[in-house]
Length: 391
View 1 (tube, helix red, strand yellow):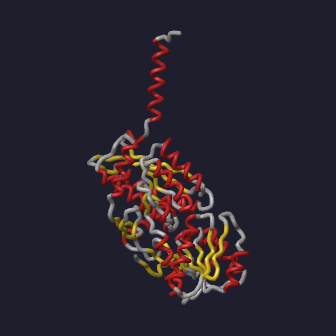
View 2 (cartoon, one colour):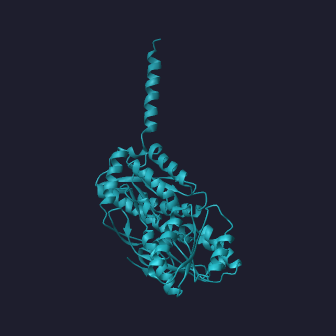
View 3 (tube, helix red, strand yellow):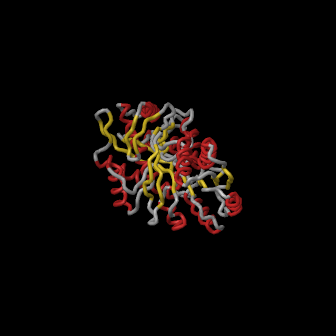
């Protein structure tokens, strides 16, 4: 059956329109960046804080007319994808951002539980990824397309062990961790090895739980019976609140030592006075901050009415790293695949970075070598600087 000239014209028009719909926004002098965030699920506060920091950064760049690369300005477009705080959803979110949204780089996931598998997906698909908050070595290990803004657990574990032994005069310790969380399990094992290497005394209890557990009384009973000088809990803030409260209910009056996953204002909302006086290692301390860090905090507080947690500050630094990587390339390619390669090479060329969470140097794995901060939870529920520990 022959088509009329009119019908052929309509078909040609439909083809052109369909083609235009699939051409990425990147082609119109826009650099499209994806965010793989836990906007729902177990740790939605983390995704929300990261998104708020990202929106501040995006406004700064676009209000100035865009990001200048090779003498030309490009507007930024941020695409936010919810990973539901789940590993499999983080992989799916990464694939959607790469294959459907045609982003040229991805910020996130934050938690190692999501960042480790999503990092594999991004590396396999040759798409640059920067995780703000993941501290597990496996996130970047042998993955040349994956970078991070946070220090690593092999550094954080000994920091926690050293601080607790000195601050508490501790000779024994106990550990309670999430066995199904790469971050929690990995850091628990690193801490145990670091503590035993110190030779002060034993880890008298090494207890685990599941991600969805709400009742920790059996594990805590075992720990309390072992009579440790303190308990190390490398868990997410929502779990920490339950653990600390249940331990107090069971009669434990000793100190807790925590890790960077404690570092959100929601910990205080959930835990209250029960968490006052305890310590945790983290990436920066908001209270008493100076310089560019204070400027960021003041702006965030004015915009959103709350103090930014470490993952918000690390998201800001992650975008800063990505921007430097894009500019290092010296040009922008309209082909997303070619632009991803340019960005990866630009990121790999970064030898040091001065961010609001501190100065970093980068090793061959794309991991920053930077200082950690130990903070105390004050009687007002603030995270107050206690000491800085550097490699």
